[in-house]
Image 1: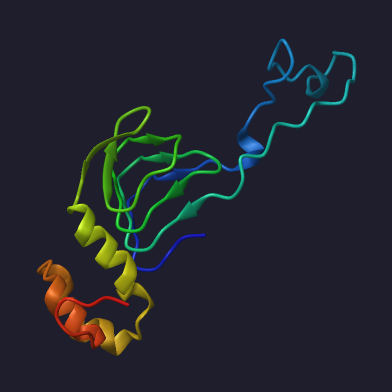
Image 2: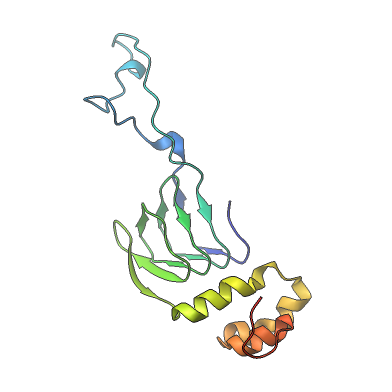
Length: 153
């Protein structure tokens, strides 16, 4: 699943479960699939589950997302990153393997954004809220949803 309002740069690769090798035997070499070797059934690689990309995620050029990873809402994946583990919402990750470099906002703002879920709003409501979204104005975003100051939900 890929969420709404995501930006995916050129060369990004999603590795699916079929790209994993079995790890339970003494070798990961695919003996049974190579002509000339005794035909033995290939053991199944363990499924790592579904890959999920949250809403409003930016994935940089040539990043690689491995099977079963969940990338949280609002995360940024740096160019060339190899994402082998889940990424928290609104985290910035980079490297191989990708590591959290920082969080985009303090925990209270992240919680408010996850509660507001502006990406689920109707398009016209999002359009009216763009200045608050781009300006990182949480109170204006709350008002755009129809909330009063200091309340959530």
